[in-house]
Amino acid sequence: MGGHSHWSTIKRQKGASDAKRGQLFTRLSKEVSVAAREGGMDPTMNPRLRLAIDKAKEGNMPAETIKRAIERGGPGDANSLEEITFEGYGPGGVAILIQTVTDNRNRTVAEVRTCLSRNGGTMGEAGSVAWQFEKRGLIVVEPGSADSDEIALVAIDGGADDVKVESSFIEIVTAATDLDKVRRALVDAGIKVASAELSMIPKTSLPVDDKVGGSALKLLDVIEDLDDVQKVYSNADFPESVLMEYAAS
View 1 (cartoon, helix red, strand yellow):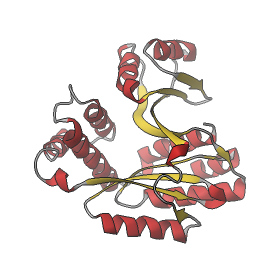
View 2 (tube, rainbow, N blue to C red):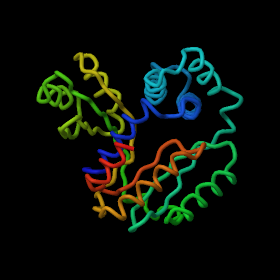
View 3 (tube, rainbow, N blue to C red):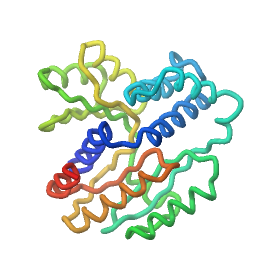
C-alpha cells in the first residue's frame, strides 16, 4: 500500500495535535450512534459498536458523551442519519471513495460535488471506482520497544492475513470479520494498538508524481474537512517528498 498507508498514518499522528476537537467528537458520535442502530446497543454483541467506542475513547471523548451517542442509536435521532458512499476521481485519475453520515442527503451531495469540482476532481457514478477497493480490517501498531517479529507472530496467530513492517509502524491487514479478534489478540499480548478500523483498501495502488500527488493530497484533505464526511480513501501511492512536506505542515 506504500504511500497510501503512510498518508493515513501521518493523518492520524497529526490529528492528535491539530484536529478540531468539536469536529472529531461529531464524527465519533455519529459512528457510535449508527453502529448501535445497525447492530444493537450492547457492545459485547456488536463488534462495530465495540470498535467505535474504543475509537471514541482513544479520541478522549467523555464517557457520558459516548453513552448519549449509544442511546441515540435506539429509536429517535439516529434513525434520521443515513450512510452514503460517494465515488469520484481526483487529479491524475486517482480513485476516491468518500464515506459520509448525514441527516440531509441533498446538502451532502452538493457539498461533495462542489468540493471535488473546485479541487481538480469529478464525481463518479455508483460503482465506478468501488470495484477497485475491498473492505478489510486495518490495524496499526507503533512498536516502540516491542519486537516487530513478535508482534507479527501474535497478529498472524490471531488470524491476520498480512503484516507489513515499516520504519515507524506495523500495518496488519485482516478479513473484515476478523478485525476485532486480531485486535483483541494483540491487546491481550500486551501490545499497544494505535488504531484498528474497517477500511476500504485499494486492490492496487496508483503511483503519482510530486505534482499530481500534491494536488490529490490537498483534495483529500479538503474533502475530509466536510462536516458530513467520516472517512476518505484513495488508491494514490504518494511520493515520499509529498508526504514529508505534508507531515511538516
